[in-house]
Structures are given as structure tokens and as C-alpha cells.
Amino acid sequence: MTRIADYAANNALTSYILQTQKRLHELEIQVSTEKVSQDYQGLAGQAQRLVNYENTRDVLDRHVTGNELMDLQLKTTESVMEAIKKELTDFRDLLIEYESGTRDDEQRVGDVQEAAFRGLRNISDYLNSEVDGRYIFAGGRVTDRPVDLDLTSLADFQAKYDGDGVIYPPTRDAHVETKLSLDSTATGGLTLANGAPPTLTAGTAGSLASIPVGATITLDGAPTAGNNTNYTVVSNDGTTIEISGSFTVGASTINVNNSFASAEAAPAATLSVGTYYNGDTATQTHRVSPNRDFGLDLNAIDPAFEKTLRAMSIIAQGSYGTAGGLENHPERIEQAMYLVNYALDITDPGNPPFGVEQSSNIRQIERDVGYQRVLIDETNQHQKTLISFYEQRISDTEDVDKLEAITRMLDDAQALEASYQAMSRIRQLSLSNYL
Image 1: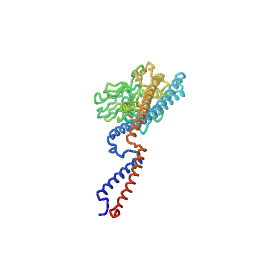
Image 2 (image 1 turned 90 degrees about the vertical axis):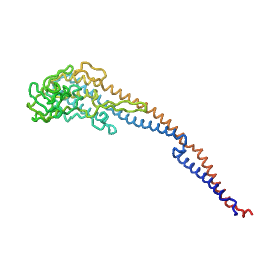
Image 3 (image 1 turned 180 degrees about the horizontal axis):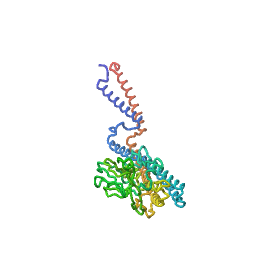
């Protein structure tokens, strides 16, 4: 044997060189990615703390994103409220102007009724506003268009609500609180009696109890086609409904003149009560932060909106020159004015024409929406500050000190180069060369 370095020494030297090479490779990755490690395992005891930091940051970030979307919805709601308030204010000005002048002038009656119908159409569009594909006034049924007033023209509206035989529902209970369809399986069949007053009687006792006085009912399936139309309920004992006469609502006595085309049995008829609202009354909850939330219960049948639509409909019903025309019912101006004022302002104007009304109003809704936007803004600012704090902690944990890493990398590179040169030199040494 002539070589000085034996097999064991050669393996040991190679192992040291490979360790330096591995260390150099890891340092090159650190310098390139600016991270201490590419996985949590490389962070040893700090991994759990880092995961907690990252999870907390991600939760806060999701809340900030959700709050930004909710703020967009609330901002849209503010725009809708502003538009509805303008419609109401303009309509109130028209009512005041009409009330102060000649009330039986056909042109003036037509103008105020056209304005009322136009307001109905506009407010219907406002309440069907959507954000990110979700209707914002539909309660929990965000994919359903919430408002359908079934309006095509003022003439069609007045044909349905002639203001005499069929009046627009004067109370909230009759207007939006009831939506049903009763067929013969529920009523046991119906009997139409053309008496004084005309009555509609169910075969099953008590099956009509859910229909309120003042509601507009629609009959379908009666043998005589002329009977399949709309009627106003003036009394109801749960089994028999009267559709002609007068009933008192609040301070107002309302007369209804209606009759059947003929008296008959209608064993397969359907009786329905409709409402313009297709959503629900579910309250949604928006979580502003991990520890705070608020409820969203504003929908298209909020009393502020309902009073608005009812006021305009009361004015729009009944065409000029008929018994139900506005010129023959001056009391409707005062009724509509009360509803408009109470829909706009917090203070009850007093003397409610249809009994006690629910107190929600445009001004209070604007305050509530404004508070929610302020809450979101302040919470988001706080959460963004916390996100920055956690980002810094994450960076301190997982980011490498570039100066230190580069210094170590250069040092290991020089060591590796020297190791290669040393190994090469040692392999050239032999006993024969020495001798």
C-alpha cells in the first residue's frame, strides 16, 4: 500500500464535505425565498405559535372582507332610503298642493293619481335592489325578487281597485300580513249567496278565520265566470265572509258595495289573499368581528315602506267619474297624508285614520344603517391594525435574516471550496512520493 489516506479517512472526509454541501444548499434556499424553512417542521418549537398567528390573521382578514361586502350593501341601502325619501317628500308636496285647490277637477285628480302610481312603480324598483346577486330587502330569501305590485298601468290598477266595490286594503294586517290560498280541501267547498249583504260561506267551519277584515280576496273556480273576481272583506266570523256593507277601521268608516253575479255553489273554488311581498321575515346576522355582530331585519314590508305603498295606493285607486273616484272621497287625502308623514318621521302625527300603526320610519332606518356602517368602519380599522401586528409577528418568526444568511452562505461556500481542494491534495499524497 502506497497511499497515505485510507478508505475510512476518505469516507469521513467525504461525509464532512456532503454536510457542508447540504448546509450550503439550505442557505441558498433561505436566501432565495427569504424564509427560514419551507415547512413548519423546520421551525421546530415556534411552529405552533406561527400557526396560531396565521389562523388569527386569516380569521380577521375574512371578517374584513365580509365587512366590506356588507358595507357595500348598507351603502346601497342608504341610497335606496334617500331615493324613497325623495319620492315621499315630493308626493307629500303634491298632496298638499291638491288639498289646497279644487279637488274635483279632472286634470288635478289625474295628476295626483298618476304621481301616486308613478311613486308605486319607482319604490317597487328601489325595494328590488340587489347587491352581489342578492336582493337586500327580501329577508332570508335573498334570491327571490321581494316586491311584485302587479302593476302594469294606472287604468289596470283602478280596474282592480275601483275604490267602491273593491278598495285597497286600508290596514297593515289586511295589506301584507296575510298571504294564503284556500282550495276546496281546506274550505270544504264554498257557497255564494247573493243576498243583502252578499256572503261567501265555507263548507268547513272556521276555515276562513285567517282572512282579515279589509283584505282583498280573489275567487277562482266558481261556475259563473263573472263571480271569479276580487272582493273586499267587510266582516268575517271564520266561516262566512260578508263582502258588502261598511266597516270601521280606526277613525274611518269605509263603505263597500259588491255583489255576486249569481248565487251558487262553488264546490271546487279557490279563495286567495295576496301580498306584494315575496320574501320572508327572517333576521340575518352579520358577524362584524369574532366577538361582535348585529342583526339585519330590514325588508320590503318594514312599516316605513308598507305605509308608503299603502298611502300611494289609497290615492291611486278609483278612476275619475266613478263612485270610487278620488274626487268623491276627500278623506283619502288626510289618510294618505298621515301615512306619508308617519313613514317619513319619528314623531307620530296623531289621529291615525286606520288605528295604531307600527312606528318604523325612514329617518330611524337611516340612523340604524348609519350606525351599522360606523360600526363596520371602526371595527375594520381595528382589525386591520391587528392584521398588521400579526403579519409582523409571522414575518419575525418565518423570515430569515438576509444579511446573516448570506454571510453564512458565503462562509460555507468558501469552506466547501477549501474542502474540495484539501481532498484533492490529500488524494495525491502517497508513500512512494514521500520516499
